[in-house]
Length: 368
Image (tube, rainbow, N blue to C red; front, side, top):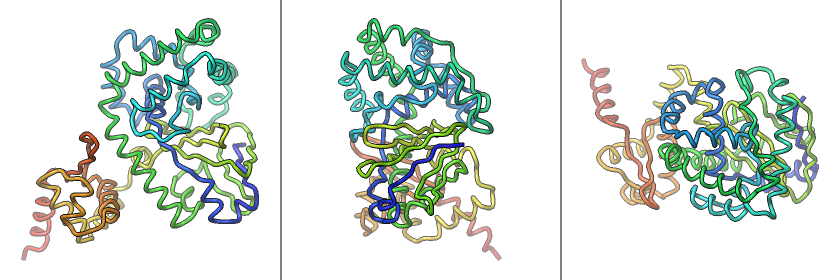
């Protein structure tokens, strides 16, 4: 059983047309909602346990009540209506929150109520967790039910105001400390996968997700996602598949149908690497390959003394910004550099003492 997304033959059989139907989206609110799911299900998300422990220390009593009250909004996925970043490009929590506040109106209350009612019906039937086997829903447990559906029928504006206040409070007290780092990771993921998609094709992109639960069946023009139920989506000629990477979604992935096509929320490469770390010898080989390029060594040495932007490094190293960006992605993947945001700039810095450690190692192994 599973989800089948079937493409029209003339789209699937034409590489350029197929690529035009694949998009990537970035939603800060999606990541924040997914983190709430993790907080409510710590046993089910072991790789995030250190973050969960620290985050729970910051939760006020009111925030704990709100986590339970709004649990339908993130327990079995997040209703697309609550994620305006799917439909419009956003780059900050504040920007997407502003868009959400405009959508939380009496006019849209019926749609939001419908989406949450569907989630509630799945919940009542224990549809997904009772059938899903293996890693995805192991140790998952439902939270206590809240009155949110009845409240949405009677006083939607009160519910919407409470939600916006909760999201603001949660971001300021809990999520902001991890968000800037996650933002860099997710944007890098989108750049990496977009490049892979354009250079090696759709099949290579799907294979790079390193999941046995999603596969492209070329001779049948369909994308297959393993799930404990059967659903078939027949793509229309003007529809797209929107891929949205997430750090907190692991070990799940979610599929939602929207007016423009299909949204697939998948686990980002950093989440998969934490869940399935490389063996030491593989990690060593990967790191040595990252270091085996003169320009990357030069970048590491420059970043040892100060934090710089991509543009600054390009000028110093006499390289294009695109080349520097690619080198930084390789170094960041191997945890050799870090990034942080300072206003509108993203600054990169080498890990402490990397160049000195490399020099000492070379001296030691070549000493006679």
